[in-house]
Image (cartoon, rainbow, N blue to C red):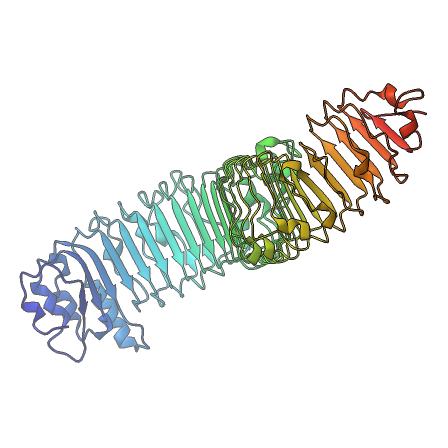
Length: 619
């Protein structure tokens, strides 16, 4: 500190005053002439006070303009005389009644002076912090302060009980809105008053952090509580929290030995809209799923659920999901029908997600779980973007169904999901493109894109090289597929609109099942490995040429469906290996034509199974 500062009688702003024991020019009484100070003042190193008279002469009660005051000591192994000196010094550092915020930090006395809780002095005090006062064994009656709105108490290691001395009277803390307890390592019990009015009538936010020995019940009458934050505490503390029906935001973090939310605790979360559970390494599920718990008592008002670094979490509750038909296993009132945001991060034991549909209201989804193997996203009308799929390297199956706002997949898909085996995208009407990194999905075996009219092209960079099943169905605007498709020598199943085909199917030497939709190309050459062929939704097809089946020595099944103008089958014999012929919705190919004396009887009588409009023909 510069010397002579006490002579600046017109000084208005002084953010920090450091008491220096070795400097006679920087004594605390230098503040006595600075009565014009305004705003915030921090007085540091108060352990350096040499004489109690210095504190008296500082005349803090004469500085009318101060709104915020910090009184800070530096902890040390003081002897008993020094402790008495510091207690007497604080007693004489009473500020003016205009003060709005007070912080006392690292004070080493065993108790606070009476002025700290004087309701007549602090008519304007709305915020108070008592931090790291480690020798203090008793909290003063802060409940008497009439307009106190925010109170933070931390590092009070000698405190074991927060009791009646804390309140001062039955109707205490009348204006308090936020209460924080942190680093209270030996705090064991929190008792309440017994008055009819009760304490904390306006309390909205309560934080209990790093209080490992606190086991008893919380203060009673928390009917106004909206936000609760519990961190680094004993799991048994949650069991004592039973009256939280007003709560809308809950954060639980680093609770050891918490395997699931206690039943009575979960039942009281009916109004919770935001739920964070973080670093609970023993958590295996959110709550026990039993009918008596789920009867409308789960957090069905939940809008935001965040699960972070819960390494043992194996599954999400069925109650937050919906069945594919939109119903649930029990009362639909228990469903999280308002969930808009879901975040799951670092829950590496979670293998499958989810078993049912996600709530239809979901707008945002974020996942970051290395152990996740299956993701099923259904009926998300408002979901525009998939979550980043980085650090989900074990993902095997990704299914997306009826997400009408979705336009594309993450660009890093091929890099971050190297083990993906199955990818299905269905009924996503605005889905336009696959990422250019698809060719990097060397483990992908199944790719299905169905009923996605917005997709026109497949990336020129190519398809995954080891595909065995490729189905591009009801994608009416798909114009073509890359030539690389005809190099997929492992492909066994192919469903594709014929308009996207070019010559080259005969190169697919492993192809066994082929489905062609619309505009069947009569000049197509089929691979000799083919065993099944499906032709459907072809309006212009009038006849099927016999040469189509040449060299198909293993051909077993032919399906023809919804070909309204198809009038004739090939007059040449079908391959002798053909075991099943199925024809449906082809009005010119009636059952009578295949029965005895029908014009196709001679062609088909040797086929073991002939179905016309799902009705088997008897010979």
